[in-house]
Picture 1 (tube, rainbow, N blue to C red):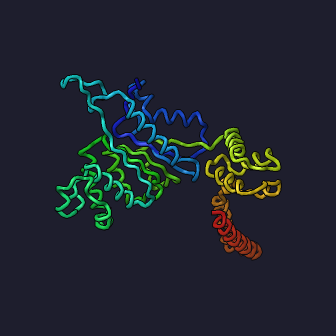
Picture 2 (spheres, rainbow, N blue to C red; picture 1 turned 120 degrees about the vertical axis):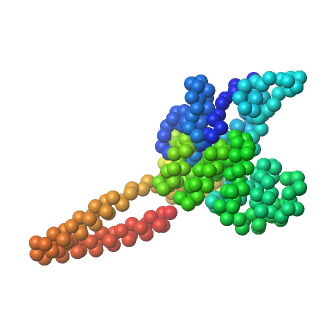
Picture 3 (cartoon, rainbow, N blue to C red; picture 1 turned 60 degrees about the horizontal axis):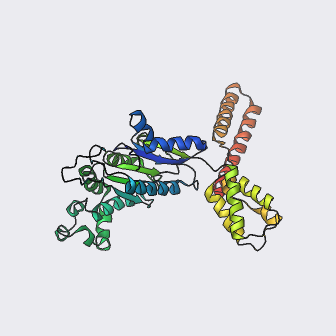
Length: 356
């Protein structure tokens, strides 16, 4: 019998990439799942979210969470819809099972995400067709008979305000029965924050974000962050060794190859997969080919912005000082320094653009 775990109705989570230790990540996952809440009698934060580095496996973790929730929903003991306790059995021992609608959004466009929510709610019968301003002919149709291809253009034409005006009441009418999993919250803008906050108040949210924008703090404050750390070097080595064995790759220096992949990938799963896939196409991976292997995930960047700001401010200050004291040499030197810094700034931006 599976243990029952109470998950707060308005819980949300964000999955992000980071450099935290695996132990911290497991602790965060335990908190999100509600195990600590159950043991300590306290309810955790409202929702979870994902963010930062590309390729760290945020979407994979999200898919794994959804799969695990599905398994637990199938295995768990039936519970009372309101209390999570074994219900009374007035109907001769028949128990009720809590049902939850899962909406998995893969689209990265902000409006398309709300369209996806509306489509799913309509398909399972939680959204009235008239709320989407559909013709009355759809009112009496069963949800499974409404063809999305015929109404897609009409729904896409609705404004964000009209979409949320239809979605939010439907979510409130089925409070706690809808779980929305968003593969990418990076595209959310400040103007859309209010719409998402309204969704948070009526549904459970799990989201991923490659970047946590500072102007969306109201959104992030509502969510519990789950950081996904990069793979440890030992784990990367085991992955590469297993791949080499299964693929039967011919490598002149396996130790050099493995070490190079570990260094260049930086523990990024997507980078590891890219490098292994490219190398597997070679008949023989020699030492020269190994040394030529590069991946952007292994590149470390230093933010020169503060340095440039201080340097420019110093040059401007020196020019004003030269004007005030009548020091021609200082004025000329400051002007030349400004030209060098501006030129350096241009080259730095060009290099960053190529790297991206």
